[in-house]
Image 1 (cartoon, rainbow, N blue to C red):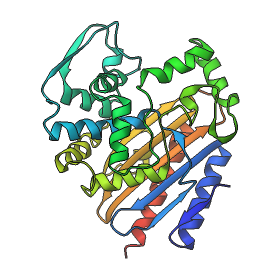
Image 2: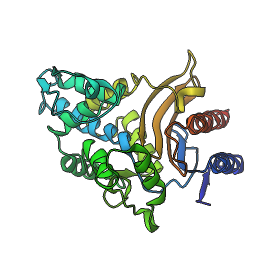
Image 3: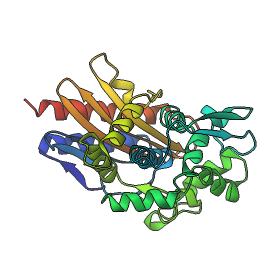
Image 4: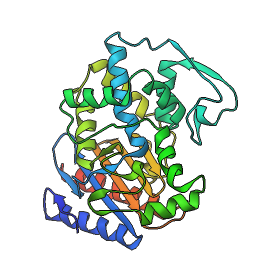
Length: 307
Protein backbone atom coordinates (compact mmCIF):
# COMPACT_ATOMS: atom_id res chain seq x y z
CA UNK A 1 0.00 0.00 0.00
CA UNK A 2 1.20 3.53 -0.78
CA UNK A 3 2.01 5.69 2.25
CA UNK A 4 -1.06 7.17 3.95
CA UNK A 5 -1.19 10.83 4.95
CA UNK A 6 -3.44 12.29 7.61
CA UNK A 7 -3.25 15.03 10.21
CA UNK A 8 -4.80 12.68 12.79
CA UNK A 9 -5.87 9.07 13.20
CA UNK A 10 -9.34 9.66 11.84
CA UNK A 11 -7.96 11.11 8.61
CA UNK A 12 -5.56 8.19 8.26
CA UNK A 13 -8.55 5.87 8.53
CA UNK A 14 -10.33 7.88 5.83
CA UNK A 15 -7.33 7.53 3.52
CA UNK A 16 -7.22 3.79 4.13
CA UNK A 17 -10.93 3.49 3.33
CA UNK A 18 -10.41 5.38 0.07
CA UNK A 19 -7.64 3.01 -0.96
CA UNK A 20 -9.93 0.05 -0.33
CA UNK A 21 -12.73 1.72 -2.31
CA UNK A 22 -10.51 2.00 -5.38
CA UNK A 23 -8.89 -1.39 -4.89
CA UNK A 24 -12.29 -3.04 -5.20
CA UNK A 25 -12.67 -1.28 -8.56
CA UNK A 26 -9.22 -2.44 -9.73
CA UNK A 27 -7.96 1.13 -9.78
CA UNK A 28 -4.72 2.64 -8.51
CA UNK A 29 -5.30 5.94 -6.73
CA UNK A 30 -3.11 8.75 -5.49
CA UNK A 31 -4.88 11.67 -3.84
CA UNK A 32 -4.43 14.57 -1.47
CA UNK A 33 -6.98 16.94 0.06
CA UNK A 34 -5.82 19.92 2.11
CA UNK A 35 -7.68 22.62 3.99
CA UNK A 36 -6.01 25.73 2.58
CA UNK A 37 -6.56 27.73 5.76
CA UNK A 38 -5.73 25.21 8.50
CA UNK A 39 -3.22 22.99 6.69
CA UNK A 40 -5.00 19.79 7.78
CA UNK A 41 -4.73 17.17 5.04
CA UNK A 42 -5.53 13.60 4.09
CA UNK A 43 -4.27 11.45 1.24
CA UNK A 44 -2.44 8.44 -0.08
CA UNK A 45 0.50 8.14 -2.47
CA UNK A 46 0.73 11.92 -2.41
CA UNK A 47 4.17 12.01 -4.06
CA UNK A 48 3.44 9.46 -6.76
CA UNK A 49 4.24 10.86 -10.20
CA UNK A 50 1.50 10.17 -12.77
CA UNK A 51 0.79 11.35 -16.32
CA UNK A 52 -1.60 14.28 -15.97
CA UNK A 53 -3.48 14.23 -19.29
CA UNK A 54 -5.68 17.36 -19.49
CA UNK A 55 -4.84 18.46 -15.94
CA UNK A 56 -1.76 19.90 -17.69
CA UNK A 57 -4.02 22.65 -19.04
CA UNK A 58 -4.03 24.29 -15.59
CA UNK A 59 -0.32 25.20 -15.48
CA UNK A 60 -0.51 26.22 -19.15
CA UNK A 61 -3.41 28.54 -18.36
CA UNK A 62 -1.54 30.02 -15.40
CA UNK A 63 1.53 30.85 -17.49
CA UNK A 64 -0.57 32.31 -20.31
CA UNK A 65 -2.57 34.37 -17.79
CA UNK A 66 0.66 35.62 -16.22
CA UNK A 67 1.94 36.77 -19.60
CA UNK A 68 -1.36 38.50 -20.25
CA UNK A 69 -1.04 40.25 -16.87
CA UNK A 70 2.50 41.33 -17.77
CA UNK A 71 1.39 42.73 -21.13
CA UNK A 72 3.34 40.14 -23.11
CA UNK A 73 0.25 38.51 -24.65
CA UNK A 74 -2.81 40.42 -25.85
CA UNK A 75 -5.94 38.61 -24.59
CA UNK A 76 -8.12 40.08 -27.36
CA UNK A 77 -5.78 39.13 -30.23
CA UNK A 78 -7.54 36.89 -32.75
CA UNK A 79 -6.41 33.33 -33.49
CA UNK A 80 -7.65 31.18 -36.38
CA UNK A 81 -7.77 27.41 -35.96
CA UNK A 82 -8.09 25.70 -39.32
CA UNK A 83 -10.24 22.62 -39.75
CA UNK A 84 -7.32 20.53 -41.03
CA UNK A 85 -4.74 21.78 -38.54
CA UNK A 86 -6.49 21.48 -35.19
CA UNK A 87 -5.59 18.98 -32.49
CA UNK A 88 -7.82 15.97 -31.92
CA UNK A 89 -10.45 15.97 -29.17
CA UNK A 90 -14.13 15.23 -28.55
CA UNK A 91 -15.16 18.70 -27.33
CA UNK A 92 -14.98 22.36 -28.28
CA UNK A 93 -13.09 23.62 -31.30
CA UNK A 94 -11.50 20.18 -31.71
CA UNK A 95 -14.92 18.87 -32.78
CA UNK A 96 -15.77 21.77 -35.13
CA UNK A 97 -16.00 21.00 -38.86
CA UNK A 98 -14.89 24.40 -40.18
CA UNK A 99 -12.26 27.03 -39.47
CA UNK A 100 -12.88 29.08 -36.34
CA UNK A 101 -11.47 32.38 -35.10
CA UNK A 102 -11.54 33.60 -31.51
CA UNK A 103 -9.51 35.58 -29.00
CA UNK A 104 -6.70 34.28 -26.80
CA UNK A 105 -8.90 34.84 -23.74
CA UNK A 106 -11.63 32.70 -25.28
CA UNK A 107 -9.09 29.97 -26.07
CA UNK A 108 -8.39 29.85 -22.33
CA UNK A 109 -12.10 29.65 -21.58
CA UNK A 110 -12.62 26.78 -24.03
CA UNK A 111 -9.53 24.96 -22.79
CA UNK A 112 -10.56 25.00 -19.13
CA UNK A 113 -14.36 24.88 -19.36
CA UNK A 114 -14.63 22.19 -22.07
CA UNK A 115 -11.11 20.72 -21.94
CA UNK A 116 -10.68 21.72 -25.58
CA UNK A 117 -7.43 20.25 -26.93
CA UNK A 118 -7.39 22.44 -30.02
CA UNK A 119 -7.63 25.55 -27.86
CA UNK A 120 -4.86 24.24 -25.59
CA UNK A 121 -2.48 23.57 -28.46
CA UNK A 122 -3.23 27.00 -29.96
CA UNK A 123 -2.05 28.43 -26.63
CA UNK A 124 0.98 26.12 -26.67
CA UNK A 125 1.80 27.80 -30.02
CA UNK A 126 2.25 31.01 -28.00
CA UNK A 127 3.87 29.55 -24.89
CA UNK A 128 5.65 26.27 -25.64
CA UNK A 129 5.67 23.29 -23.26
CA UNK A 130 9.33 24.00 -22.55
CA UNK A 131 8.54 27.62 -21.65
CA UNK A 132 5.71 26.50 -19.34
CA UNK A 133 8.03 23.98 -17.71
CA UNK A 134 10.78 26.57 -17.22
CA UNK A 135 8.35 29.12 -15.78
CA UNK A 136 7.04 26.57 -13.28
CA UNK A 137 10.61 25.86 -12.19
CA UNK A 138 11.27 29.59 -11.82
CA UNK A 139 8.21 29.84 -9.57
CA UNK A 140 9.51 26.96 -7.47
CA UNK A 141 6.83 24.49 -8.60
CA UNK A 142 8.85 21.30 -8.25
CA UNK A 143 7.64 17.91 -9.44
CA UNK A 144 5.29 19.11 -12.19
CA UNK A 145 6.84 18.62 -15.62
CA UNK A 146 5.15 19.88 -18.80
CA UNK A 147 6.78 17.99 -21.67
CA UNK A 148 4.42 18.04 -24.64
CA UNK A 149 1.35 19.55 -26.26
CA UNK A 150 -2.01 17.77 -26.17
CA UNK A 151 -1.94 16.23 -29.67
CA UNK A 152 1.15 14.06 -28.95
CA UNK A 153 -0.87 12.24 -26.25
CA UNK A 154 -2.87 10.68 -29.06
CA UNK A 155 0.03 10.45 -31.51
CA UNK A 156 2.08 8.41 -29.03
CA UNK A 157 -0.81 5.97 -28.58
CA UNK A 158 -1.61 5.57 -32.28
CA UNK A 159 2.07 4.99 -33.00
CA UNK A 160 1.90 1.67 -31.12
CA UNK A 161 -1.82 0.80 -31.37
CA UNK A 162 -3.03 2.39 -34.58
CA UNK A 163 -6.44 4.03 -34.40
CA UNK A 164 -8.09 1.16 -32.51
CA UNK A 165 -9.17 2.43 -29.08
CA UNK A 166 -9.62 -1.09 -27.72
CA UNK A 167 -6.05 -2.06 -28.60
CA UNK A 168 -4.71 1.22 -27.17
CA UNK A 169 -6.53 0.67 -23.89
CA UNK A 170 -5.33 -2.92 -23.70
CA UNK A 171 -1.77 -1.71 -24.20
CA UNK A 172 -2.35 0.96 -21.55
CA UNK A 173 -3.05 -1.83 -19.06
CA UNK A 174 -0.52 -4.40 -20.27
CA UNK A 175 2.26 -2.02 -21.27
CA UNK A 176 3.20 -0.88 -17.78
CA UNK A 177 6.83 -1.26 -16.77
CA UNK A 178 8.60 -0.88 -13.40
CA UNK A 179 9.14 2.63 -12.07
CA UNK A 180 6.26 4.20 -13.98
CA UNK A 181 7.72 3.42 -17.38
CA UNK A 182 5.34 2.47 -20.21
CA UNK A 183 5.33 1.34 -23.84
CA UNK A 184 3.05 4.32 -24.63
CA UNK A 185 5.11 7.49 -24.22
CA UNK A 186 2.14 9.58 -23.05
CA UNK A 187 1.73 7.17 -20.11
CA UNK A 188 5.45 7.02 -19.32
CA UNK A 189 6.56 9.15 -16.36
CA UNK A 190 9.89 9.91 -18.07
CA UNK A 191 8.28 11.23 -21.27
CA UNK A 192 4.78 12.43 -20.41
CA UNK A 193 3.61 15.57 -18.68
CA UNK A 194 3.53 14.42 -15.07
CA UNK A 195 2.78 15.53 -11.55
CA UNK A 196 1.83 14.22 -8.13
CA UNK A 197 -1.17 14.98 -5.94
CA UNK A 198 1.08 17.01 -3.64
CA UNK A 199 2.47 19.26 -6.36
CA UNK A 200 -1.02 19.78 -7.82
CA UNK A 201 -2.47 20.73 -4.42
CA UNK A 202 0.54 22.94 -3.66
CA UNK A 203 0.00 24.78 -6.94
CA UNK A 204 -3.73 25.23 -6.32
CA UNK A 205 -3.05 26.52 -2.82
CA UNK A 206 -0.56 29.08 -4.13
CA UNK A 207 -3.02 30.18 -6.82
CA UNK A 208 -5.82 30.63 -4.29
CA UNK A 209 -3.46 32.53 -1.96
CA UNK A 210 -2.03 34.72 -4.77
CA UNK A 211 1.44 33.37 -3.99
CA UNK A 212 2.46 32.49 -7.55
CA UNK A 213 2.44 34.55 -10.77
CA UNK A 214 0.78 37.99 -10.94
CA UNK A 215 -2.38 38.44 -8.83
CA UNK A 216 -4.34 39.30 -12.00
CA UNK A 217 -3.24 35.96 -13.44
CA UNK A 218 -4.26 33.88 -10.44
CA UNK A 219 -7.62 35.68 -10.33
CA UNK A 220 -8.16 34.88 -14.02
CA UNK A 221 -7.31 31.22 -13.46
CA UNK A 222 -9.63 30.90 -10.45
CA UNK A 223 -12.51 32.48 -12.35
CA UNK A 224 -12.04 30.35 -15.47
CA UNK A 225 -11.59 27.06 -13.59
CA UNK A 226 -14.90 27.88 -11.93
CA UNK A 227 -16.60 27.62 -15.33
CA UNK A 228 -15.77 23.97 -15.95
CA UNK A 229 -18.90 22.27 -17.27
CA UNK A 230 -18.06 18.69 -16.26
CA UNK A 231 -19.55 17.56 -12.95
CA UNK A 232 -19.36 13.76 -13.32
CA UNK A 233 -16.27 13.26 -11.17
CA UNK A 234 -15.15 15.25 -8.17
CA UNK A 235 -18.18 17.56 -8.13
CA UNK A 236 -20.82 14.83 -8.38
CA UNK A 237 -21.41 14.62 -4.61
CA UNK A 238 -20.56 18.23 -3.82
CA UNK A 239 -23.13 20.09 -5.90
CA UNK A 240 -24.99 22.55 -3.67
CA UNK A 241 -26.01 26.19 -3.69
CA UNK A 242 -23.51 27.05 -0.97
CA UNK A 243 -20.56 25.18 -2.48
CA UNK A 244 -18.40 26.51 -5.29
CA UNK A 245 -16.05 24.22 -7.16
CA UNK A 246 -13.29 25.33 -9.51
CA UNK A 247 -11.69 22.32 -11.14
CA UNK A 248 -10.11 20.60 -14.10
CA UNK A 249 -10.63 17.02 -15.20
CA UNK A 250 -8.09 14.91 -17.03
CA UNK A 251 -8.70 11.64 -18.82
CA UNK A 252 -6.80 9.48 -21.30
CA UNK A 253 -7.15 5.72 -21.85
CA UNK A 254 -6.93 4.29 -18.29
CA UNK A 255 -6.40 7.65 -16.57
CA UNK A 256 -9.24 9.50 -14.82
CA UNK A 257 -8.22 12.56 -12.80
CA UNK A 258 -9.51 15.76 -11.34
CA UNK A 259 -7.96 18.61 -9.38
CA UNK A 260 -10.04 21.36 -7.81
CA UNK A 261 -10.59 23.82 -5.02
CA UNK A 262 -13.87 23.38 -3.15
CA UNK A 263 -15.10 26.51 -1.39
CA UNK A 264 -17.81 25.78 1.17
CA UNK A 265 -19.30 27.74 4.09
CA UNK A 266 -16.60 26.43 6.42
CA UNK A 267 -13.54 27.09 4.27
CA UNK A 268 -11.53 26.02 1.22
CA UNK A 269 -10.16 22.60 0.33
CA UNK A 270 -7.67 21.92 -2.47
CA UNK A 271 -7.96 18.40 -3.86
CA UNK A 272 -6.13 16.28 -6.42
CA UNK A 273 -7.37 12.77 -7.21
CA UNK A 274 -5.31 10.89 -9.81
CA UNK A 275 -6.36 7.38 -10.87
CA UNK A 276 -5.16 4.65 -13.21
CA UNK A 277 -7.47 1.71 -13.93
CA UNK A 278 -6.58 -1.93 -14.55
CA UNK A 279 -9.81 -2.31 -16.57
CA UNK A 280 -10.15 -1.68 -20.28
CA UNK A 281 -13.75 -0.47 -20.48
CA UNK A 282 -14.10 2.93 -22.13
CA UNK A 283 -16.83 4.01 -19.70
CA UNK A 284 -16.14 3.46 -15.98
CA UNK A 285 -18.76 5.50 -14.16
CA UNK A 286 -18.00 3.66 -10.94
CA UNK A 287 -14.50 5.17 -10.93
CA UNK A 288 -15.91 8.67 -11.44
CA UNK A 289 -18.30 8.08 -8.54
CA UNK A 290 -15.47 6.80 -6.36
CA UNK A 291 -13.56 10.01 -7.05
CA UNK A 292 -16.67 11.97 -6.05
CA UNK A 293 -17.13 9.98 -2.84
CA UNK A 294 -13.48 10.42 -1.91
CA UNK A 295 -13.73 14.17 -2.41
CA UNK A 296 -16.95 14.42 -0.39
CA UNK A 297 -15.53 12.39 2.48
CA UNK A 298 -12.35 14.49 2.53
CA UNK A 299 -14.20 17.83 2.45
CA UNK A 300 -16.57 16.73 5.23
CA UNK A 301 -13.75 15.39 7.40
CA UNK A 302 -11.55 18.45 6.99
CA UNK A 303 -14.51 20.76 7.67
CA UNK A 304 -15.26 18.91 10.91
CA UNK A 305 -11.75 19.65 12.15
CA UNK A 306 -12.36 23.39 12.01
CA UNK A 307 -14.80 23.24 14.94
